[in-house]
Amino acid sequence: MPGEKDQAIRLRRAQPEDRPALVALMGALHDFEAAIEENRADASAADSHLAWVEAEIARLGGVTLVAELSGVVAGFLCYTFEEDPGTFVRPERRRHALIWDIAVAEAARGQGVGQALLAAAEDEARAAGIAEIRLYVLEANTRARRIYEEAGYGNYERFLAKRL
Image (cartoon, rainbow, N blue to C red):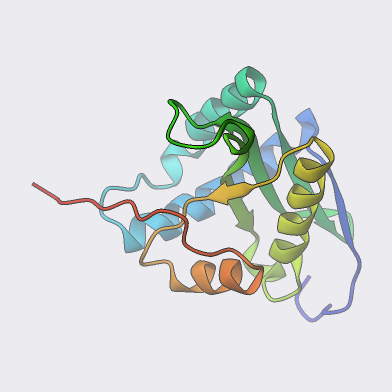
C-alpha cells in the first residue's frame, strides 16, 4: 500500500471472513485512543468491542462497511440506526444514523479511505430515509476532528466529563 497514492478504493459491506482484519484495525484504533485518553482500553479489548458493535448492528439495524486497496482491507466503518428518546427532538428528526467506529490502516492513511467510507455511509443512510448522521470523536483526536470537519461534520452537542 505505501507509495500507491492513486489506487482505486473498493467499498463493500463486511463479510464474516473480514473479521480478523477488522479486529486488527479495531486494535490499532484502541491503542491509539488509549494513548490519548486514559480511560480507553487497548487492543486487548478489540475483539470483544467489535462483537458488541456487531450485536448492536443486529439489534438496531446498521452496517459495517469495508474499504479495500489492492484487494486488502484498508479500513472500515460501523454504524447503527438510532432514535432520540423522549420528545425534545421533533418526531421527524429523531431517527438518525450513528457511526460507532471508523478505522483506517496506517499504510492507507492520506489516500481518501476515511473520506470514502464516510461518503458511503452517508449515501446508504440517505437511501434508508435517514436525514442525519452523527458520530463521536475524542476531543484530543485533533486529526480525526479535522477530517470530520472537512467532510462537513460540525458540533451538534457537547458532551462534557469531569474525572472524580
